[in-house]
Length: 172
Image (cartoon, rainbow, N blue to C red; front, side):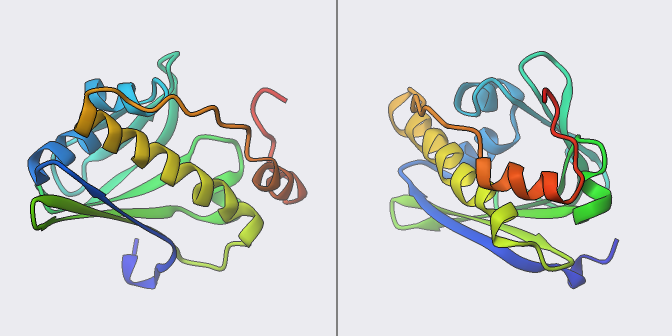
């Protein structure tokens, strides 16, 4: 896969009172991610070319991908493929990059979600709502020891756009 063809579609930055090493651990540890990511567990092989998986609370594979950049504790780039029939074929892989940099006594975490083709705003609305909630919960966990309890509604705009493309939404 030629990642140079990917263009940013979502960029989200957040400042966290923590260290780059702890932010890295939060992004790459199943035990840590379960706490702030609504029970979802991040698993990855610690190397370029390794597997990336996000397991749902029931243990099923919700997201899968590959590691393209692995530079702890500074940068992680992975493909982010939702495990719904037909979605990768219709939308291609998403490329997610986490850039971690020291910012005074804090850490600046920048998430960039990129695509190799145009993606509608309706479909991107799910990530534009979800990423801030997930990363804010991680920030809270790192700073206070407790994740946020955010009541999230299903991303109806995104789901409707996916259905128009013929993507079957699991559970419906």
